[in-house]
Amino acid sequence: MFFGITDIWTYVIGAFLIVLLPGPNSLFVLSTAAQRGVRDAYRAAAGVFIGDSVLMFASAAGAASLLMSNELVFTVVKYAGAAYLAYIGLSMIWGAWRNRSVTGEVETPALSPDPFRKALIISLLNPKAILFFVSFFIQFVDHTYAAPALSFLILGAILQVFSVLYLSALIFGGTFLAGQFRRRRVLSAGLTTGVGAVFVGFGAKLATTSL
Image (cartoon, rainbow, N blue to C red; front, top):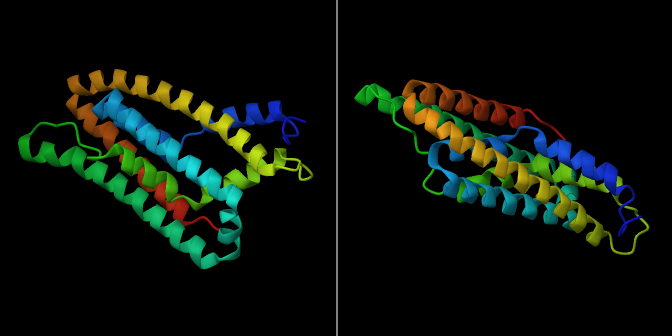
């Protein structure tokens, strides 16, 4: 046992695989990298990192119990998150084609004047994340350990290391796509529309989830 963690290597493998699963956070960082470059993409990644850290601390502090015991709170947060994801998706679709209809050319649509803030909100308005952190972490924490908060902290730190590495890979992959977008304007608009549609899908999925 390692600081109250019962099977750390199984957790490491599981955390690595979970980070690779596509989600709105990683997709937003990739889109930001492709459209606005490395600097803004890392600002978005910082928003994801801080947002997830807040949710992990909230999970350890008992926020998951509140969400599970109070359906009204869960529903409010759930629909707020779903609406925000849908708003981002629709804004991307609208921005991708609006400039083309006006000028005849497709310009790179702006994602947000502040990618950090938008990424942070995407992370925080996801009640499923809090429930996930608790349900996943608790499988590897010995309930008899004297300082379970330390166990949660170590598990969260491992997950965040994987997250930073993965987001960095997406950022530099996205900068490669940026060059392709600049040369192929219609392709840029089409792919941005596809990403926007995926965000709308994320919002619909979150809206239909339940405790």
